[in-house]
Amino acid sequence: MRLDRFSPAARRTVVRAGVLAARSRHTALGTGPLLLALAEERPLPGAAAPAIRAELDVPPWRDRELLATIGIDLDEVRRRAVDATSTHPDDPALWRLERSRLRPLRIVLTGPATRVVCDEGGRKTLEVALWAARRGGRAFADCDDLLWGLLADGSQESVRVLRRLDADLGRLWAGLRERAA
Amino acid sequence: MPTMTELAAAADSDDPGTGLAAVAALRRLADELEALHVHNARARGWSWQAIADALGVRRQSVHKKHARRSVREK
Image 1 (cartoon, each protein chain N blue to C red):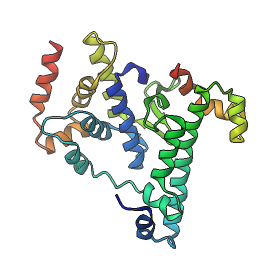
Image 2: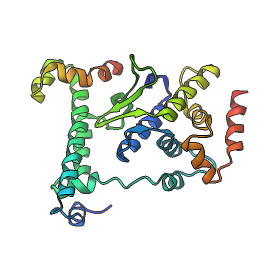
Image 3: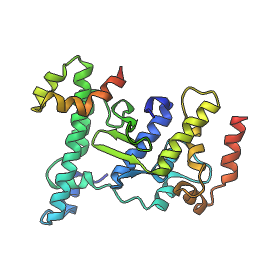
């Protein structure tokens, strides 16, 4: 399992999901953050990112506010670091996705100040995405392949959230099947 | 976006919980900055030993933390 098996947009989605999971103080990367990250990357019919965020009850990120209490301007520090290094913390080049050699069901996403283990749903999503890409003869799993993974198991949080939002799951599936045909 | 002064005023700095959470946020920021600067140093051809010396840590520590990521960049 490697991040470079995903297309640039899918890589950004996985990295963003890791950031969202870490900011929520989740120790695991599940289908919820992956769904939200995907909706931020590309439109999902009937499921806008703000609505998904509200359904997931993502807690507010407080680092900017907390650092201000000790005199640190997070945005200014980041701006200077990005200027000096020409690299952004969310740059997928700084992230890696690895399957444990000794525990093959354990997949870990690590990046700057972030380390999250995929839970069962997150792992299945990534595995199904790579399977869908292989099945479609694509070298890289893209965002549609990630969506396939997020829809594959009806018991996962991603599908439950989409149902609560009344998103048209049939339409989403139809789009994926049409592409696969 | 609120200004830094407004953000600072919004938090109660007398609260130990806020102070501790600020320290944790500072650690996360330091880790983030380290990753950016190590990536930049490697891109400029710095050795792991030179990076470790600059960070004040052992070469093995910095290599273990960042090496695989840097290999993939190539």
